[in-house]
Length: 298
Image 1 (spheres, rainbow, N blue to C red):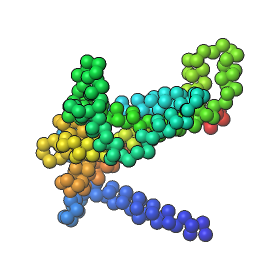
Image 2 (tube, rainbow, N blue to C red):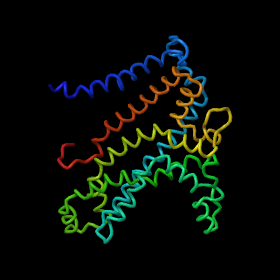
Image 3 (cartoon, rainbow, N blue to C red):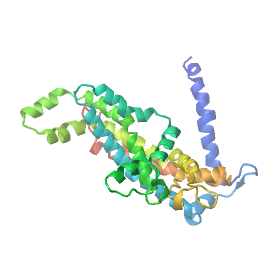
Image 4 (cartoon, rainbow, N blue to C red):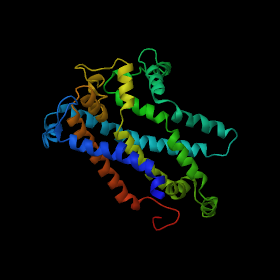
């Protein structure tokens, strides 16, 4: 009876996840463009990634740049906002709602909103900078500012992570802070020796999930390139000087622009191994800095 009740999940796993997963693994060793017959080519697709496709390295660098800067900044931003919203002042529930609201807004609508905010000539951001005598950059039209623009947009929606940290802060025992007060600890000592260690399990979870999602960035760049007329020459969208050509976007171009499914599948599996290695690395060294209430890493 148990297997009968979980059969819908098993069917979904086999036909919607495991089946396509194994199919893409086989396709990654073939020359396949949907309309033609699969021709087994061995490791040729993987060799092409490293030796022939210059845009592969560009897309990998753009993605690494985004991950390296966005993950620490959004994690720190979420912790900082959670600390602010954990104060007991009147109207705090309203502030919590306001800060969480960007995390539940529709993605495409938000991207178009930021395209208007970051407009070089009429955008609100450059208008405010102009009030202080600062000549704002071209943002999404300048190759040096395209990725920082997306990171800035990511920081605006730290409400999702903030909610997790806030829930954890609410569960920290006041007795710990009372004991620290009796020992004469100041605010910084209480933060680094009580608050931060108690937040490490959530920080650990947030870093892993944020890293995985950041490596898969696609929708933001795709919408902004299409909606903001930022397409690069050559017919394959990558933004100004391919500065927005992230790994998943380059993979999508190969799969659905030139229909090279074999090469795109090889790219997908290479990304899988990158994320898997980083996740194993985080898990391996988590016992050195993650603190759990129960002790003994539990």
